[in-house]
Length: 476
Image 1 (cartoon, rainbow, N blue to C red):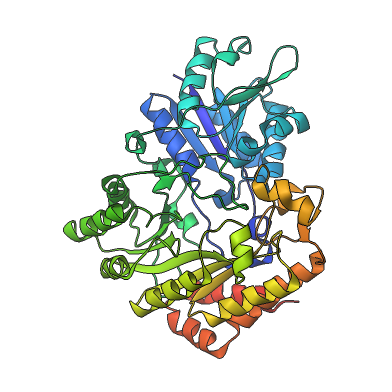
Image 2: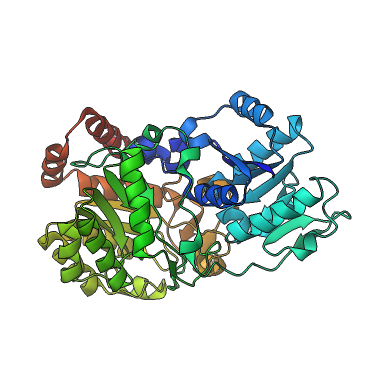
């Protein structure tokens, strides 16, 4: 059996979120955890290094790699983390040149050929959903004792590599896993102390905090969204599987609050009802937050969710201009937003909204409409992201027709960049950065919101996170 090390490359909160990361949560790398548990089930020995949570230095990384002496080293990278992944890979190759070094995650899944053209520090890239590809790839490498393995790599779907002649070979994508319940629970036991992921208990909620991802893929076609890993076919874990994961988090890790990182959790109504009923039947006492589309939740479901501990519902609203919403293919209306947010507030849940400024069809007028629309809604919290043209999205393909697309600096591919990577026609980078900060100030520095946030404070950690967030908003 193989020894496999999985690495989430080291990044600071500032690198991930800019100034606005002062109080942001450190999220567990659940993609690596699912991959690890799947490979453990196959009998392999797995370790995870989460460089973000552990703030791993190069010396620490080197020591841990030499101690474990893995056969395979896999690095994951979102686009914003790609530069760090390259830096990490080059460093590893310096002291372990014979290692089989893999790259997986959203960035290489979006632009595999470009990635291999830019750098030669990765031996193999894994594109798309990784579990079945890693299983087959590991078995193949084992048979060849991790040496002279390139000849028959063309038999494996879902990878990219250079052959012995130096040519880049991109294999077809692997079929998606049909039954997600066949996957073991994510291997959180391989992560460092859960306290490292507990940096942001939201006001009025309790640590410890953990996140879960109950589905994969999205059937919607929003132009800005990156679906290059899991595709547009929506697949969900069953309510029973999700409850099993919740029980493990509560009983094994002492979790009190769960973030459901799934924009489509409410898409399948029967599953939501089953999940809520199982919480009742099993007497599971937790606080939980979720994301939802405004067109996939109704008052009956909202009341049931509130009854069993749901607290915050996040909505991707994106724009306050209906024409912009139509053009970005969001497939919602402003009337639906108003009705749903008010309903959520009415039943006692806390609505939160996410907005994007600087979209391809934005003007200064539509950006101002978006901010005013956010202010008009009874939202408890907001985020204002600057539109980012993620690679291999429709946004990227149309951007140049509606403004200026700048030479990519992958480290700036985040909602709160230091330097803007795209500007709509007639709008400058400086305008978008200033407008983003202005939007936060106009929303959060209202007396009503300040008073509400003060009432939410239950512990020193929440207080200091709010202070950090306030400085990020106020700072010029």
